[in-house]
Image 1: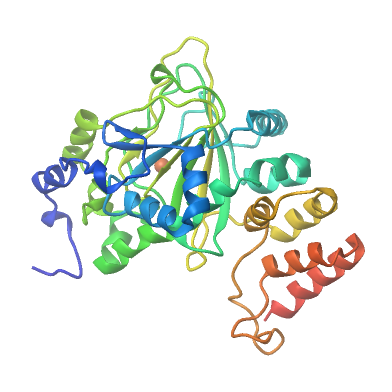
Image 2 (image 1 turned 90 degrees about the horizontal axis):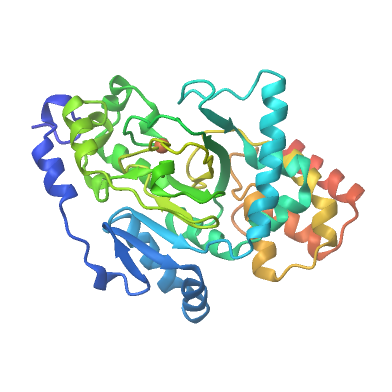
Length: 380
Ligand SMILES: [Fe+2]
């Protein structure tokens, strides 16, 4: 059997079943408050205080939860400040209204009308309301969760998903990267690369509304990320049927966060309520070693945010979390003729430039000039 290239004949629902039937060893996750239906449940407050004592222990446990663990966890109360969530929700509504009026904002994944979608919500919110962006991303626990899976220098993209009453469930699938490719393309990637690809992205969802079961929170199949042939398997009827029999759902409250390995089989659920709109801000967090699915214009984001960011009195951790969400965190690719390493081994990142600007209290004009120069010298 070729162990480097898989084909569909090698897939087995029996093997998939034994992967998915693992029982959760909860003692391996001492920081969790508990587990529901094989999903680890964390309380934001206890993660924050544990991180004060030993940040690396928290990073390690969350990483294991997404790899050798069930591949999914919930953080209750990720946003203690629900005003920050509501303020962003208000901007989402404005954007949805404006995009609907101009005929844009389509969703490839749902029937028109049953769903609202905002692509690149990260940039759009920054451009509309800098303070709302800052309030939302000045969340050190969110930053810690991102780092736990994809390491430092990550890039966040955000897509708002709104499922209205009557909105239909999705088919089960895996997510970006390879979850967006046809089987022909997937099969050309050596299996080690297929497995590696899950480490390049973290899937997150922040609940912007209450999400009772009848509103259709994400259906999840714990441990399914560990099935190596999964990228070729999820379109097959036998695997879809297995998913439909075994997937679980958990209700979420506004401000809770759900995070999962992008290789986990999952699907949005049916919204069977008469009047409840389910709204989530989907966060797709890319490792600096990966490519994001969406292009974010970080220069526009930074020029929109900088005047407000200069005025704000944020704690160091909060400020760093905003910088991580707003600016690019990796030195490459660049033009090494014009953007040589600074002192160390790598050229200055956009995040480092922004931090320097804030520490040295640059004016807006000076920041604008320096940012333009940073972009110019990195071009080939
Ligand atoms: Fe998905």
